[in-house]
Length: 364
Image (cartoon, rainbow, N blue to C red):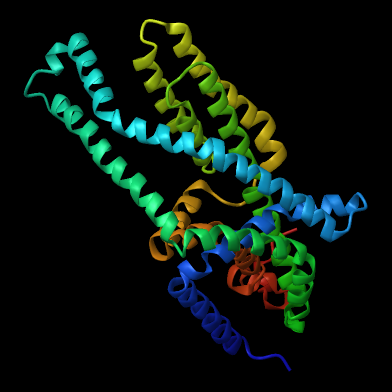
């Protein structure tokens, strides 16, 4: 006989609370395992495709791991040092850029930029604030990345965990499926498929879109000669994870830097604007419809809230689990609404024929 609903709610509530407590207490320890699991989940469809071509799971995993390792090594040797250097240079030059902006506004709008103008005082302080806070942020990111667990251990554990998780992914899913409660197996499977579909569309699809657009923006901006083009492309690519935010912030930053660098050479400024316009056209008409889909059930506001809440409570590990948990909650809420619409609480007594009053029937 199945457990009463009340007891089931208590047990699942306790399990959820224990999971959240462990996530909060062991966040730094389990970070490499969470990253490795995320990588394995992201690459599982590739392994399935290779298996469909006739390769064994072991060989498919080895091929994917070697290719991924080569990409990481190239990025670590070429891209990341340049990215860090440009980010530091951009932060260091922030006061100069804001001084140039202040001088430009002073020449064009002298009445608004006198010595006592709040705008002038704000521009004078913003640049120095960006330099101070930006340098502090970069140093904190680098020091925290090296001290999460032990950076050397981190970069060793993540590939190993990702390799074994990718190798045993299908068997792990099968074992979890075998442990599902018999009375709720069909419902849990249905919800799991919907969660996986949402994550596959959003995490894999949107992650691929971010990678493609970030690479395009960085490469194109560097080709037109924009200083800090790699940093701007990286920022725009990362923020593309939240719809429209990457193009808005990246485009504004790129065009602003282009105005300082190419003032008087309008064709280069227009070229920078055209890069982001073209990127938006490709994203909206090709990448997002084919890789993400028209609807994945994750509203941008809900996504931003989940990232903020989990990031503030659980740190970087919270950022990793925020999207899966947000997708899971979204699926469960939609399921709950579906059950609610089919219940007597929503439909009322009118849904029961024998409960209707014959005098309430409409006249023929």
